[in-house]
Image (cartoon, rainbow, N blue to C red; front, side):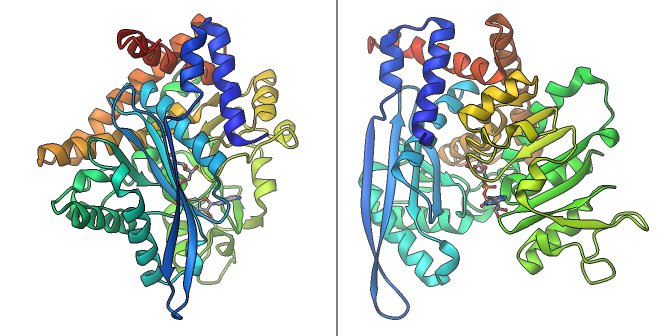
Length: 425
Ligand code: NAD
């Protein structure tokens, strides 16, 4: 089943549980606008290559479209539609005045030179420039896109429009209109929710074993924050594979090792330059991504890509709680199996909403041209994440359903309210 179909099924399920007006569900099941572009790029060898790009503007009912741009060889329209739809729900869950969008280019950016990457990004921006803007649609980083790429987009867009328009994208570097706290916002938001969800379990952080799949922006920051709060991060992985250290991983060193070697999978060799055992005699071992998902642990954080836990491996997951920092990391079958097994899943549209929340703060600061100190960003984020957790939990309790359904219901109530007030349904 496609990721988009999976998302529509979740929407339908939530609508059924809350007995939602059918027109609201129909409206939200169709993206407002789908843009597909061909992006010609002069490569370093003089030849021109065409890349395929997308931007899906799902809903602007509650504010300008908002969502990241992904560079990946497996990007496809169905995926972008799903991610754009999830953005609409995510912004509604945390109650920020933005809608949902998403973009992507089919490319493996690691195969491009920096100059090719810049030319491709600028050409893509030129193609979508008529449809984006600080009050219309505001892209952001996602998998394989970063502050540099956002800078090229903002620069190209400002050049085309003949005026500075920093607010056209978020996730920019600090010296170019970025917000303090944006880099770690997704992870930080997830940790705020995680702490609320585990508050009553009475387990100390040092006794809580955490496994993290995906060691990029979301995953590595989550590992860093949890380590600094005393949690025991015992395994991490990236696309090349993972490492498991029974006594816990030294996260700061693992991040440095990944920077230097390209993968955490390289970071286990005892006695060599990258020696990641934390106590004398405690040795780390290399593991595959499949093994990582099945490790004995208290918390499993999924921060790589979609469909990582499926009907095939959901029975083998040992974690008691899953935090979805990635979008759509469980397929529908896995979701059902885990719910039946009593595993608590903190769903993506709540768990990773810290990213879009601080993106919203960045955009607000750009519009005001006035910038907040980091502790202000942190406090505002905490308030929104804790409140959102409470609303989602209350909805899931009210309807005796999962947190995922609680999150969709919370969002649906807000979306339906606007549709009705605007006489759209
Ligand atoms: P990233 O590119 O910085 O990191 C992705 C990580 O996942 C990398 O370490 C990569 O090697 C790893 N990975 C890829 N395929 C893997 C696999 N099969 N198994 C294990 N690891 C694998 O991307 P990111 O920004 O951290 O995004 C990760 C996820 O979080 C995505 O689903 C994204 O949509 C979601 N997300 C990110 C943000 C954000 O602010 N960065 C916000 C919301 C949601």
